[in-house]
Length: 203
Image (cartoon, rainbow, N blue to C red; front, side, top):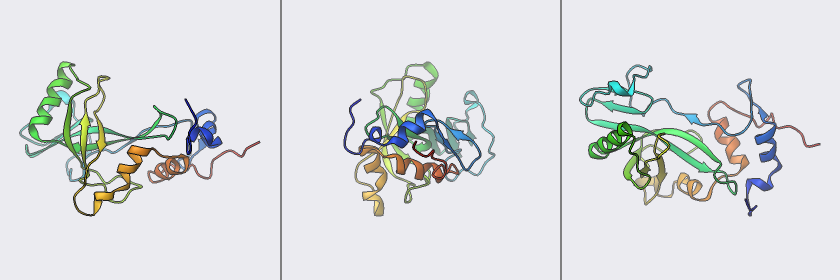
């Protein structure tokens, strides 16, 4: 990997984080990146417990770790929302959030998921349906969800001109350009993992 201007590889804290780890406000010591999981889409009012994917009800209300249906009218799935660590690809700060899809696109993904025939070239128009901490309001940001052949959630890339005041939303720039260590620490802190006071001192 080549060190570029603004690359985390030029920041000694990145090496410390990925080797020694940082003490965290949660009481643990975290070594390297870990994902932040959002439990359900905004608007879900059912139970917190996940059901099995195999028990999905397309005409009712359902929540599993991967899929959400509300009243047979709203269809969402868990997606990976990556923010690349600048200059250290493929390392990325990873949220797993939720995105809504049209019924046709949702059905196509569920079929590909069940059959194990996920296609990395398959994409669907998707709408982010969470308010992601550390950002101005992200609800309803538009983008594309790309199937992943590893069987995990699709990757959501936010792009295009957004409606209303979000047309210059910072998430677009951070997905495109990546983030540094300071921003990584801010985002972890937004979810109760404040490591800014636990960085080891340089020798």
